[in-house]
Amino acid sequence: MLKYIDHTKMGRGKHGWLDSHFHFSFAEYYNPANIQFGALRVVNDDIVQAGKGFDTHPHKNMEIISYVVNGELTHADSMKNRSALMRGQVQYMSAGTGVTHSEYNSGDKPLRFLQIWILPDKNGYAPSYGDHRFAWEDRLDKWLPIASGNPASSAPIKIHADVNVYAAQITRGGELAFETRPGRQTYLVLIEGAAQIGGHVLAERDAMEITEQDITVSATDTAHVIALEMAKA
Image 1 (cartoon, rainbow, N blue to C red):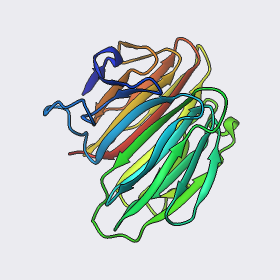
Image 2: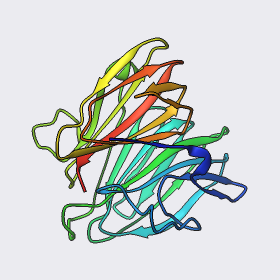
Image 3: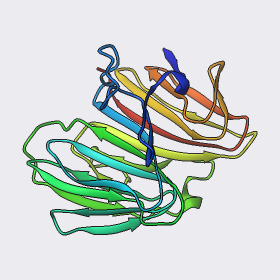
């Protein structure tokens, strides 16, 4: 089963320094019919203006992935981690029993990143942080494993959830297949470009809910996508 998600009908938060598209209920956007998709609780597509950002704030019992689309993301947390990430690079934080952190755009151009929250398989993990500077070419016309809760996965980021995260950039005119087996579901976001999936035309920021169905992403323009595959709710 496929369900097309039009980005123009998503929740929206505009605060001058921050422009957010909310795939699921978050902050000022609340829709009781759109709280989560399986273990996936938050996908926020955030644009942060230069020199601005999220001041230090707490998190608890959540797996948090930040995927940088453009610009520079600077992270600092109560575990004494500090890093700056660029396009295509990823940071991961398991909030566990509790952590505080900040995220800023320390560059001179707008920062765009996807903020992804995944519900852990249980509460009470010790907080942890990591980041990975993936080579951009490792996702060209193929799925790059980014994060996984499966110990056998080649994804370098290990999370506390039955979720597998992949990214790809598909050359215009190309196609890339993706499998969602029985008992599984996938949330796919077209980050940049244009594509078709199962007869649906996707523009930048659109998404698809995919349940127990294999699909092919056909790039009508260069298509930058992220897919989160997980147990069916």
